[in-house]
Length: 199
Image (cartoon, rainbow, N blue to C red; front, side, top):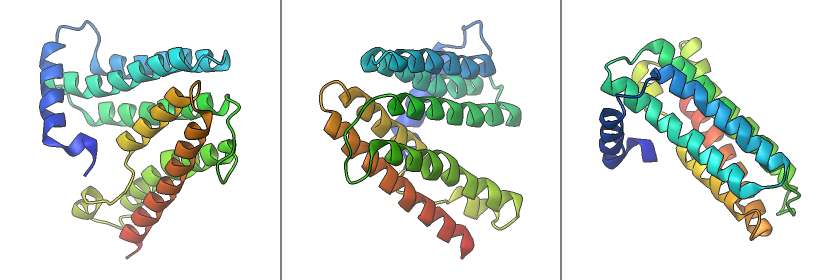
């Protein structure tokens, strides 16, 4: 079960949404603003400052949680908003991975750069693509689409990437280990989802 599916997460999002309905921004504007925070986070990584970068990526992640909560609290949930949210989620994750690529991390079984490329391809791209393509090709009904498995869903993948960024200035070898672990788990998740729809 993903963090986002836990009962406390739904309750927390509902409370956040109802407390932030006063914001002068639409849910889509909140979503899009997360890209700006991520871009500034990328800038700090380009200056080899991982902790300010992490703070900005955490803010971008918080905005990702807030946008949907605000849309639900305002009863303004739309298919277009969900589409924008999904695209922006992947952009922010790409910028986070790009930020991690800027640090000279040691290898752990694989070069850190290769681990990040695997995370980008199998985690960010292919895990979502398997669902979208199964839906596009009508290879699965809604029940099968909703019940898609995955050992490392997006929320957990991001938490591990945030942890890797946090460890960069203190334990770069631990960052590399985490990146390798995320790459391996992303590959397993892709395999689980491919098998789910191929059967």
